[in-house]
Length: 61
Image 1 (cartoon, rainbow, N blue to C red):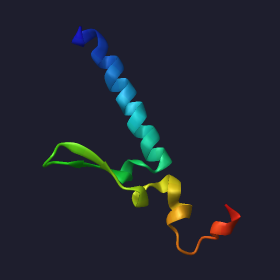
Image 2 (tube, rainbow, N blue to C red):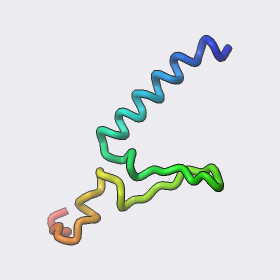
Image 3 (tube, rainbow, N blue to C red):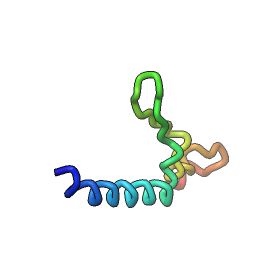
């Protein structure tokens, strides 16, 4: 069964990672090698730059 679904899975993961890089959220995720978990850092996410920028006008949001 793996030989049938592997190409579809790999294609979907490639598209998923490409979309994450385009959106700027790929850098916000990192793998914790000790616990083998994925950690997410809101401050590194490119989609939320306006919220992390101290010079941004937060009243206009």
